Length: 334
Ligand code: KG4
Ligand code: ZN
Image 1 (cartoon, rainbow, N blue to C red):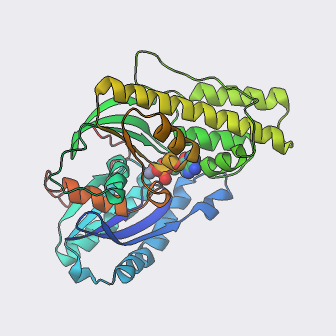
Image 2: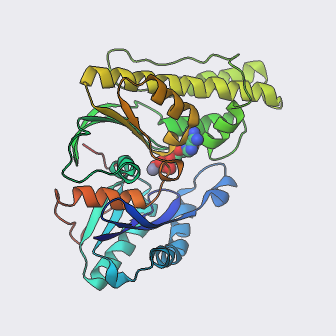
Image 3: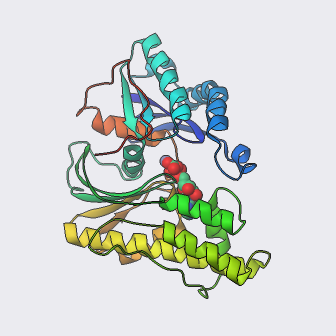
């Protein structure tokens, strides 16, 4: 079973071929980071036009690296939400045209669900193996931060979510305030490595809920940058980056561990772009009361292999999409 997946929800044009759900035959990503860096963040219009330019070469490269032709593909999967409408449109229309032209079924995939299935690429199980459930999925990306209780493949219960900024968005905004560049997560991580714990920033615990809030932290950083006149002093900026990262990681780790205990899950599965953060990976692994699964760095940020894996494990549970499959920029998991 070869699944060809297309992912264009944000600023990466990606295509992958995954065999039997977990064996990556190719995973090609055309990053737009260098283009958006000039603007200090993603410009949606620029992103969708860049997808138009990249999608065909990326598909050809994915087939070539897999050593396959279109005739060897059994199913097509495509991210249809959540994400930027103009970006999603490129991938969805392209995948539909491809599926129609070669007569294959197409599966519209939820980007957040795809992120969590990166854990099945990294730690495969048979589709009928339910030993990992119930699992607590902490999905932390640039646009979303949520905890889902996963009862089985394709079956979720929303446990908590951010009430304002996503964790990745907070990293990106903090990096902008500290003039560290884009994308913010890796920039903050790099700067924080040389910082001390001299700046402590506030944490929003939202006690009694499993929800998150990061906008107050961003505002606190803004005031600190102004009051302490940090910009221009590399050591002070590093200390602020360290204080910021520590605050985000502290909340994510402690709230995930509390939810894992409260809900009596077998494991925590971390995913999404922020799962690439070393401090988050290390602390969650150290402090979790249960086994922790975290994808390798290359499968944390946006890619199409995770979309294919998601299609493989959920396609037996769902009908293929019809050709009126639409983009759903605000699609949620449950
Ligand atoms: O999942 P993703 O690639 O795209 C979305 O679906 O949003 O996540 C991108 C986010 C960005 O906000 C980026 O700053 C953040 O992931 N990120 C990180 C790290 N690498 C990427 N955040 C913290 N530490 C990192 N090392
Ligand atoms: Zn993503």
